Image 1: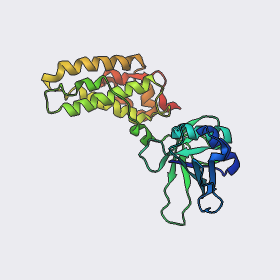
Image 2 (image 1 turned 90 degrees about the horizontal axis):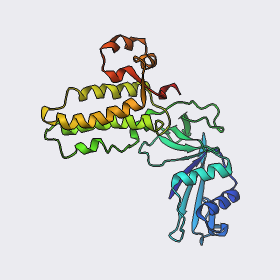
Image 3 (image 1 turned 30 degrees about the horizontal axis):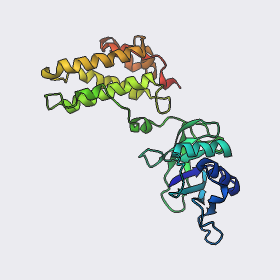
Image 4 (image 1 turned 135 degrees about the vertical axis):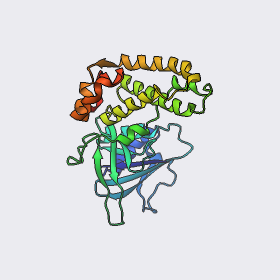
Length: 280
């Protein structure tokens, strides 16, 4: 089943044709009906779409079902993108996130991002989009900005750090592995355009550097050769995606009070990403 939220209502006939194209079936095999309609449905349809009136900023909700006879089964992301592009509407869908108030969004021009919806506290409350990473034509007055929880939720593979698993002899190996994973994920973000949204807050970046500091003091003697080899690879990746600036750009982003301690910090504090993600 696909759960889709639309930022404006659509013509049911146009939606029927679009769903037929997406699922590669005939329009006569698609039923698009109000969720309360029981009499005029096409009960033989192999794709059915129930629509319901929403509230506030979310005027339409869709529940789409495809039976086992349907061969083409697009992902939620593809389905949302196609509906947005063809029917000129911004589409929200949950995706793989486990954050209940945050939804993926696709605009008609293909732009992707996330929005935060205020959860209604009573039956009388309406749905409101309180923050969006992308400007949405249907909601010109919505507040825009990054959503840090989305960054933390994203799972980034860490094959270099995972070489430590099962090889450390110390009981602190899980902690050390976690620190290496965090450092590796930062280098991956730096080299791949700062997924998932091309944005990264300076506070989170500074937190990553502080965790890198811990790797220099918490590794037991018996594990140091192994960790040192992994860390050299990750440090090289960090250098390749950064440039020396004596830490000025990060200090500006964090506030001038952060600059006093920089001369005594490790070398990675004195570099900045080639494309600083907090400036956008």
